[in-house]
Amino acid sequence: MRESRAVRPDQPFDRVLLVAIAGAGALVGHGVGYSLGAAAATTDHGHLSVLAPAATGVAGGAALVLITRWARRAPGRPPYRSLVAGHVLAYLLLEIVEAALSSPVAHLSSPGFLIGLLAQPLVAWVVARALTTGADVLRAALVRSRRRPARAPRAVRFPAGLAPAGGVVVGAPRHRRGPPLVVAS
Image 1 (cartoon, rainbow, N blue to C red):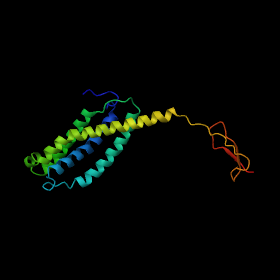
Image 2 (image 1 turned 90 degrees about the vertical axis):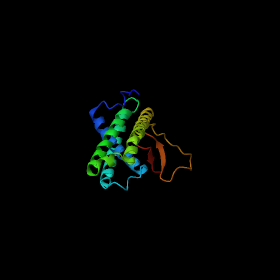
Image 3 (image 1 turned 120 degrees about the vertical axis):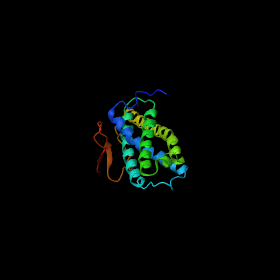
Image 4 (image 1 turned 180 degrees about the vertical axis):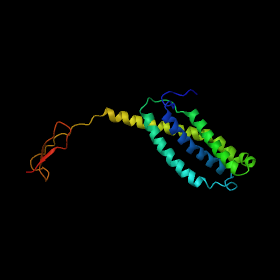
């Protein structure tokens, strides 16, 4: 699948944002793998109680910035290949560190590790779709807000005897400086 230049991470700052998002996505795939592989009880994952909230916050902020940046560009395909590569690399780095702290062969051959590795492309696809959809929605909202100019308020005239208690509205300014003028009776 060929990636479009519109959302491919051409700019270095976009790459930094994608790395932050891929790191959090790797943690999601890690959780999926060890939940489905039922190996969570056999390995120590105490470090995730600190790492997961921090990664979630950083990735959430990065996603908001990236969506805003992509919304200002022409629409295109999501950077799926870049996200898959980032997810897999971040996952492997996390697993290598975990394996170094325990028995490497048993850790890297566990069902949780293998399922987590297989889950990374799916998680990357979901993340890519969410980022692209967010950018498309924001782009549509920005285009819509630019097309609809604000209307100047119109003067409200009341029939005799039906005027509001505070006074009668006698006119509205032709420019956009404020609400219609209310004159006390």
